[in-house]
Length: 428
Ligand code: HOZ
Image (tube, rainbow, N blue to C red; front, side):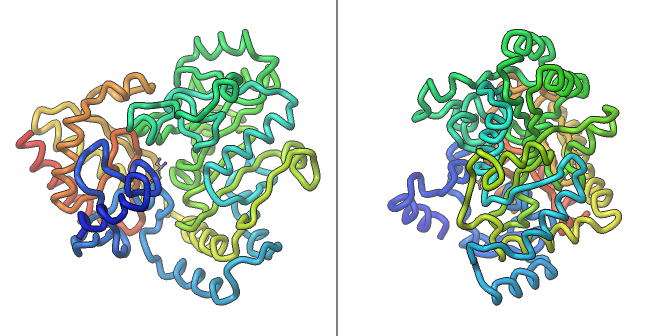
């Protein structure tokens, strides 16, 4: 049935998918068409059950169909799908986001991570009156033109890190540097510092698998942005409310006294699986946005009443005491289990995780930048991916994507996953 659906899809949708990584092109085979999902599992069009480690690429932190979220969404849907006018729920969600992330004084709600990143960039340029920006190789900030240079995720998967259709003049102001390279960073600021509107970074890069910014690197990013008046923009679409309630920035704040970014881009978890994202920062910057200021940004579905209900119910659940401790322990259990299973078979393997987000590499040691991530053995990963898929375990169908554990995953799910991996490693 998956094959039949894929053939039908290919006739009417480019590549048969509405987002390239879903197509299984990198790993080969037929994408699984999802029929329904519950908790930590989904069932494909053939009725086969999978343990889901994608969770819609991050949003489903509570697992699928959490009763409190379902109830909130059902109630909201009865009140109306979309009004194009403000609602109390948008205010509540903005308040909840700000309460959890101290660097945020104001946020604007939008519908997708791409929209949030693109709008944050325009605001950074409008607020500073500067044009140049720094981004890092392997970091993906959505598919807005200016940010689609040497990006990770689907672009890395298909070996084409800069998209066609992006005019050179549009990216002429985008400076791309190596992730975690302090020397290059300092050099770039020396040359371009006074012209830089912002430095945009995924603090924990989830679009080149899972690579953390080192603490010295992050510290220098902060210092140099402050010194030259550029805004430090954290893209936490993946890591936001996923690695900790206060997002990745709360982890760096524990390691670097007084640390905070100037602006933050959020998505995924804050919508709980509905199309919802946000960008925010200090009041002085955010008040440059229309209707208060000269930087234009708008959206018919922004702050959608059903999406905000879903996001609010999700944030309420993940704010409960101990939520991230339990989730973090379970994710660590998975990464440790997979690592031990590979090592027991004499294979190189390493992984890292934070909260409910993880990555693993069929190599050692842990990569620190995109170039090293790119040296991973693709065919080896593909064999692993398919063995796991056959065993009913759904990891991302691409080397360059992070994975996600939800609160619905049980220790038994993790053990079953590790056992399936061990069986594969023993034969590999
Ligand atoms: N850009 C997403 C992965 N980092 C893929 C989204 C999707 O295919 O749903």
